Length: 327
Ligand code: SAM
Image (cartoon, rainbow, N blue to C red; front, top):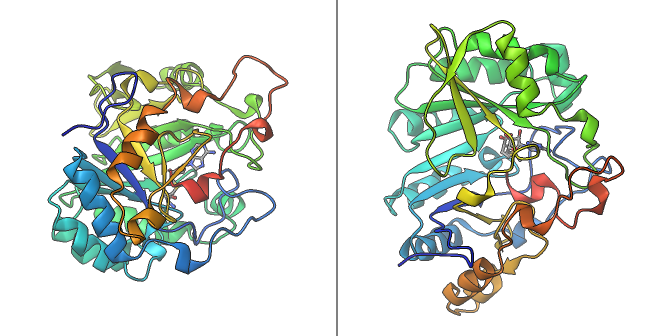
């Protein structure tokens, strides 16, 4: 069985948000008005996550990423990972890295195929300015302790003009000895996140900046990859750029998102959502709902993001904040 949208794209990758709470307050992710998302009892329980993920697997999903909010703030994270391991689908996680030490046994036991850790700066004071929490040493220490373990490690760096764009090559330097992939992500617009077109450092500009100091060549990407990968000569790790804004990669999209309160989003920027949790709780077959949502998927960026106009603002988007979608 396959999940195909009306543009012929096969969807086999589920990004599952476990919570809309987070222990960091990143300025680009959480709305400035501090919107506080959902009551806990609206979230999917571990058993519901397992049940719904199982239905997605039967429909053709063959990769699951746990995200949030911050997935590791869920007290039952070990139970959730135990359940999902039973599905025998490669599992990965996107995390801020603060609580990684708490699941180190599961990482060592091979529960996760890959871990993406968000880190936007290598400076302690700037980390505090971006996240409002003094956790740089913890995060960097946790990353260091994962190096050499049998798990793919990627660092997610959101590059913002005049905030951290002067550190791009410091991040590239990390790949000299660490066999990790450093991914530079273009700053994306969400309501209330202070976005503006001038704050984007686009993929082209990023590669020029890197090219001034390093020589690198393109390496092959998988057709569903959002990141365009490069190898810096002589480095053990790789770098990559995720150009959601300047060069969207929607034609190869294979992703479905499920929010922590059980709403399916067929795109990060989709304007509509399909509630799966209430029908699931009521014992209904949710597969037709999944297919209906997928059929409605827009060809590109949720049918939103009218680029090119300097006047355009993030507030005109119809969407949730990133923390409540799950990145
Ligand atoms: N708490 C986890 C974390 O920090 O990785 C997972 C959730 S977070 C929403 C997932 C990813 O989305 C992170 O790598 C984060 O940097 C990215 N992200 C959030 N807001 C963004 C924005 N406005 N533009 C680009 N990336 C963003």
